[in-house]
Length: 109
Image (cartoon, rainbow, N blue to C red; front, side):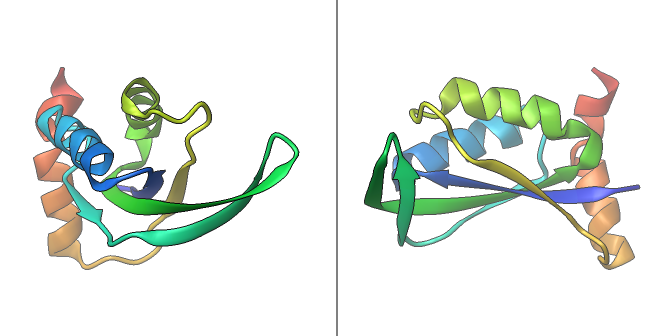
């Protein structure tokens, strides 16, 4: 069993809620963490931009990354949303089992 966390920066809390609710309802992720606003700075179309964003982190199976990324692209207002998977190298067994059990119905679809 392999677990990943997927980081997605959203423009606001509403977008983070919409994306997390859809991913949880689909059973593609077991849970989501929505952080308070952060300041982001980045290059975009030849300029340095400064914005506030809301980090969203979801926990799921490694093999669900493509499904999650596709759904995020469908729901996210950014032209190029960041959808970054981070492998979880160590996790307690009962939590990992919980993540897999919460996403099991989706695995059978």
